Length: 410
Image (cartoon, rainbow, N blue to C red):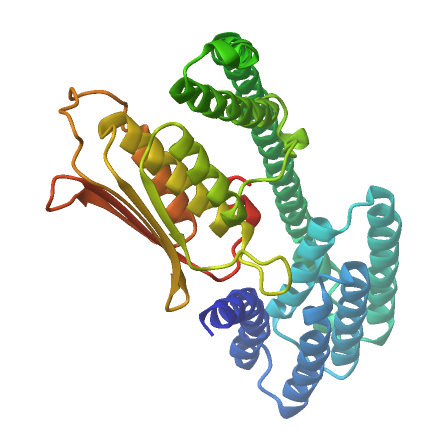
């Protein structure tokens, strides 16, 4: 309702100003007519002329030349006819002609048309009117050749004012176009700079992280090839290390592709979801963690499937929570609960007190920041903090309504 009201006001403002100008143009001759000629016939002639002007002036922007010629012919006919009958009209009756000339200069872009039609046609009408006036005037005081020329002499100033207004509008439009070009160029430079920075970051990540991760996976696979020489506990550990390294390497490759070219950011592998949580828990158990997982909701794949962003966010929360538990509470039992609660996905990860004290300051704290950003992007709620027994809890509630895939960068 407010938007409609604003549009209504914006549309009526120029119309109100236009109506005010027309009203002022028409009222001025009426106010001065009594001093020129108070006779009833003069008033009727003036009113007839005003009616023509009232009909023509609202069309002056669409048909500026036509309106000018109609008003000029009407004025000449009224003045000549009044002089032939011994009537005089107010000199302010020429105001409507000045307004029409202003619009000729403001809206006519063809100079040749102005010179040929306006000056040629208007001059012919004025010359014919002066000639007829000289022949039909009832007396010398109604022969107004010099008076007519004196009144029409300032009229080119109205056209010049309109021409200056049109030039000003053209200059403003050109300035706006230049400003738009500058803004587009600035945005392009910013996009190019951002792309170059993404490529630089991708190159650094590839050189620093990818190479080290690849070396880690190669070493893990080498140990797996010689698993017969390893103790039983080490075989399970090295299997989990190799699987985790390969998964991290795949996700890192997808991330590097996004950084190098956002237009080619489709992942090489499907994004993980709730169906991948059991495998994630198994890998954590294989790495030596005591994980108790309860997943009481199905991901589905049909019409009732959970939104992919919700599944991805839940997976990343569990993944990051398990990583933090191994880092800050090694050996402590971890409980993972995934369930639906009142139209929301409830994701809770709780670890107990660590078996041994862990030095403080290990970690950057960016994992919790990333989790909160993902949850906020979906309109959910995240609560993290220590438990009463000295452990740590991560509790996220995510709405199950459909969300855009780009909400969390999918």
